Structure formats: structure tokens, C-alpha cells
Amino acid sequence: MKRLLVIIVMIHMMIVGCEKETPNYPSPSIDFITDSGFVYTDTTLALGQVFKVGINAANPNVNLTNFIIKVESDEVETYLDSGMNTPTMYFEKTLAKGINESEKWIFIVRDRDGISAEIRLNVKMDSSSTFGNIAYFPSVELGAQNNTTGSFFSLTEDSVYTLNSAFENQNSIDLCYYYDFIDTDENTIASPGANIDVSVYPGTSGLASWTTRRTSRFKIANIADEDFMSASNDSLLIVAYGQSEGNRKAKNLQTGNIYSFKNEGGKVGLFKVNYVIGADEGSINISIKVQE
Image 1: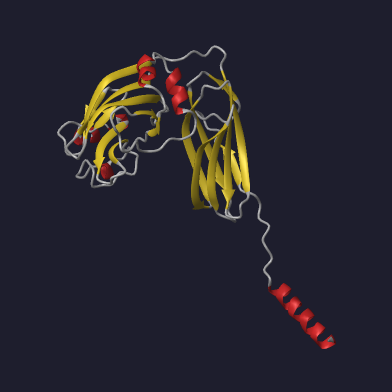
Image 2: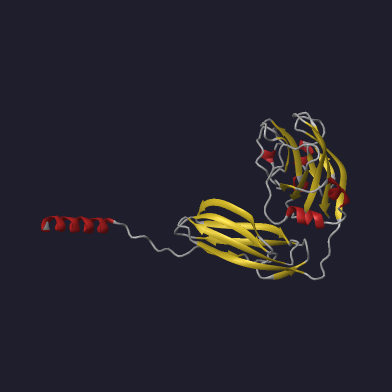
């Protein structure tokens, strides 16, 4: 028994001796960018006012794996939850003051060991805020990728562009329409910044050749047609989109659908599908209301 006990003790000591000590690395760092043009301290803004935030994060010892943005007001919304595997991260985004009186923006970075760090920014609404004006485009006709009618639309210019003319006006393009042969997607409105297959818009003016690809985000809006039609300021537009990030595509569109969207510049809007004729030579007609 004594010999067995000695053997067990020796084995235990060998196992303990072979175990690697877990490194005690510092937590990741995360900081606001404080350059001119960025908001990095608590502030008061008008309803719907856009503001730019920049973030630097790093951990030279353990790679960063997640970046999360949450917005806390009456409830907590996840604005962004992005994965990565990198020792450093740079983030820059134009955000907008929502409809709540006070919002707490929480920026969280997490490393491979599950250790997190966060910074916060409180944004209050200016008491003199009023709802803003909107632009209304009652009938926008867009052609699919093999239709002679242009597939691209600029909200600022209120203009439809073909692929070649859109290539020459990349800084202005907010929306594009195409037919996807995947059954669950089919008639899709997206933007040049979405992950659109290169076969949809090929050639020398195709999206793969663009140097500026603006991204719009989309959410299905659970609002009635009469509410869309009666909207005369941006209150409904702001409420419909909320603060969480939308998808990069509005898929499988059908007559009567209403979608909320936010463009690259932070302007929110709604579009309603008036009719859609499918296939890659088809077209779609939409009505749009968007912040001026």
C-alpha cells in the first residue's frame, strides 16, 4: 500500500509539473477616436441628427473575436454583433439620434479568452427637437439586371441609373434592384455595398470594379399602407427603423410589402412595393419616403 501511495503521489506530481500555466494577459483595450469630426463624449443632439463615432481596440496577446454595439433606452437593442480574429480593430460609423429622450450607446470588444472591455456614450435629445421633413417619390420604376430600365437609384438625385451611368455616379447610389435565381431571394432590393454575386452586374462597370460601394440596410416594417401614405414627417420613419442594424438586402419582394431602410449617410426611409414583375428582365415599382 505504501508503495502504491508513493507511485500515485509521484504520478500526480508529474501531471501537475507538466501542466502549462495559464497566462494572465491584460484585458483588451478599447478607446474612442478623438479626432475632429468624431463624437467621443456625452452629448445632446436633435432628433434624427447624425453623428460619427470611431473606435480603436487592441489586444497584442490574445486576438479580438467580437465587437458588439448595444443601445440602451426604454429597452436594449443590439445595433451590431460582429465576429473577427485580429489583434487590432478600427471601426468608424455614422449613427443617428433615435426617438428616445436618452440613449446609452455601449461599445464592447471581446477577446479569444472571453475577456471583454467596453466604453459608453450617453446621447440625450435636445428639448427643442422637432420632427423633420421628408421627401416623397411616389413612383420609382427599376428594372432587373437584364432590363433596359436602370437598376440603380439615388435618393439625393431622385434619379434612376443604368449600370454604366451608375458606375460614373458611385457616390450617389443608394439602392439597386435585381432578380436572384435563388428561390428564397428572387426579387431583391439591396445596395452596391451588399454581397451581390459578380454575375448579377458583370462587365467593366460591374460592382466588382467600383471603388465606392455605399451600403443601405433594410428591415421589414409592420405598418399599414394607410400609415405609410399619411406620413408627412420623419416620425414614423424613425420609429419603424429603430436603432438595431438592418439586413443588407430586402429579399423576395412582393406587392404590398413595406420596408424600412437606412442609407450610408444615416438617412432613414420607407419604401412600399406597388407591383413587381419577376425574372431577370422584369421590373419593380416602389414608392419611397425618406428624410430630407
